[in-house]
Amino acid sequence: MVRINGKEENTANTSLSDYLKDNGYNPESIVIELNGEILNRNNYSSVVLQENDVVEILMFMGGG
Image (cartoon, rainbow, N blue to C red):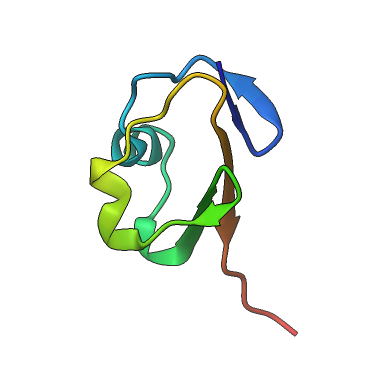
């Protein structure tokens, strides 16, 4: 299991880019924190989620 935004998900052994695509995320408008470290957007396709990983997906929002 992988914890993504506080929820346990059965996504171990899935690439991060596949997870984002399958869940409708636009990689250009988010930041990913994996196990406490911010990932470079260029590395999303090379990251494979592992058991017990903790992922936070942060979205940019505009407004006032």
